[in-house]
Image (cartoon, rainbow, N blue to C red; front, side):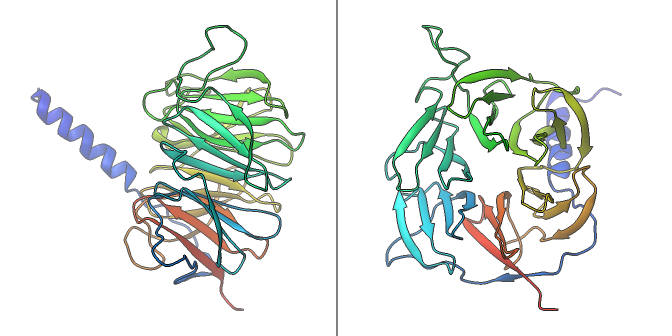
Length: 312
């Protein structure tokens, strides 16, 4: 039986929506959501919150698409400062490295920015406002919709790119930002991506990429050699690996946060779809504090939610 083209489009959309809404089963994690975790000055609001990260002092950074794109809170959620007003076009990923430098990705300006702890930009990867593969003069690589950034134990920098228009791939730089190599292309096979949304590196230097539209996490060695993958029906968005080497996944439109082992086995789950406390519209990126508190940036509900361990 043949279906009209418009019916096939609708069916494809329905299948994609069903995949995006897939709920992962697993034991519930012993956490509770906390209301009103952050205070802001009168008249200040956050826009769509795309990223969250924590520095060595426990300060919490929130990246959002409002007029104050990068906001710092202390460990108790009190407002400290805001950065980057009028600077970002579409902020996306946020990380803090071991030296408390703040890294942001901007998918619309095609650049990755490194701020020092005082808030000054000290390194730019890519060329602001220019998408592509290589600078016309051939001396540095361009980026095309950079999504996320991560750091190896030895200092190398990894960037994932491609948010629907740019070629999806992973790029590797040395600790000073000099280009080393890139790998990947659009596809469904090993080492190929359909939206390389997030990246994380474990203590051994293995590289984990959330291949969102392929509904999987791919694992590579430090040089980009494909090792294995784990399947996660839905929209695996944000990866985080803490000092205990647990692999955390902000699971997008499924509205869940998953705790995984490094092989991708589900160890525990919190959250579901919705707008109430403890629920998500899109669990986009996340971070875990030294006190095992979980912070999750939700782009659709315009908030970062905090989860704390339940009392024994």
